[in-house]
Amino acid sequence: MPGAPPVAPDPDVQAIQRCRAGEADAFAEVVERHQGAVYGTALRLIGDRDAALEVANTAFYKAYRALDSVDLARPLRPWLLRIATNEALNHLRSQGRIARQTLGGEAGETALAGLAAENADPAEGVLAREQREAVRRALGGLPPQYRAVAVLRYLHDQSYAEIAAETGLPTNTVGVYLLRARDQMRKALAAEGVSAHDLS
Amino acid sequence: MTCPDDARLDYWLDDELTEAEATTIAAHVAGCPRCVARRLTRLAEDRLWETALALDGAELAFLARANLAAAWRRTAVPVAAQSASLAQWLAALVLVGAVAAYGAWITVMPVVGEGTGWLNRLGLVGIGLSWLLGKLWGAATTIDLPGLDDPTLFLAAASFGLWLFVARPWALARAD
Image 1 (tube, rainbow over the protein chains, first blue to last red):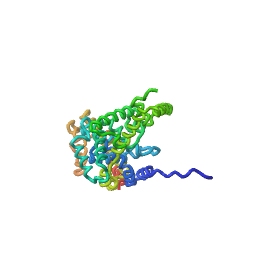
Image 2: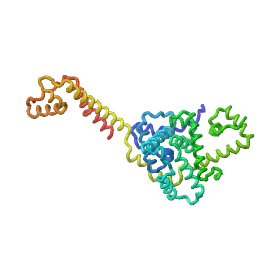
Image 3: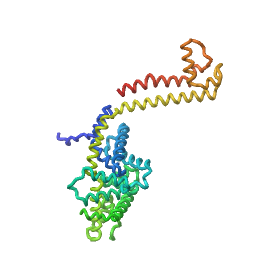
Image 4: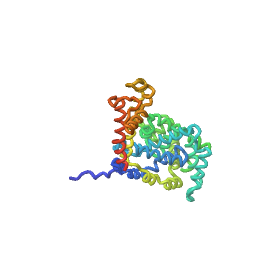
């Protein structure tokens, strides 16, 4: 009798089951698969690559500690991103930088200059690089909650409902925050003379 | 239909409207040059922001050098061992609770048996000292302590025994 094609086992589920069986190394596979997303989230929220790395590490550690309670019927990445987002926001709070922390600040400029100088891709247009940095500065100027919503939307292409689930905000609030985030970013970019149409 | 406001347009472009609402707005936008322009601007913004927020080459290189997965492999502790640590902490907590209860008890009832109140207040130090002196010299001490039939003392002793002989060895064995 022809049956449905076999479903490939989810590698995250397999890794977690191995972790639960005492094979701690298996979690490294999870880290490997999701480190870009987790680190990217932390970096865009914090704006400092070393701090973001620390936050990403902490997020993975906390996730590992909570492996016994994770629901294997659900995808792992949103859960990891929720932990990473909370960690990053906690980091900002603990640094007392919520109100003033921006990528446009001195530290942010230094970090961005370092990133740009390091491994600069000669094929990448100067204009595109400047636009990218302007967008990141504009993002860094947003209040942390708006920033978190924008990062989850634009970095991870998540729906309002997914963002709501990860941030604990009502779905309608996510829409409002995103609207305000776009509006503020638009204004910040306009002040720097950057237009989205430059890319189109 | 009048032009949708920015919020409606955003919801529509983010695919967050019901099918009926989305159909209505799509029909309007198709015939409205102003809304077509707004839509194109929003799509261009989306593309710019998505590109800008993605990790760039330098950031990916930094992450690759940091190699979180390798760092994890070096420091990973099995989940079971962590549970064992939790058991250890719980046992220790019971022990501390029992000791605290015992301390409170001898404070409230300072005179026990034929002993004096201030000596009893020495609490567990007194217990250890009494036991040690008794073992070394087989002599009666001047410290008169509650007997093992006292429930609080029994709880303290039992907790300590549980932690020392059961929880701790089990945790260490699992960690190995």
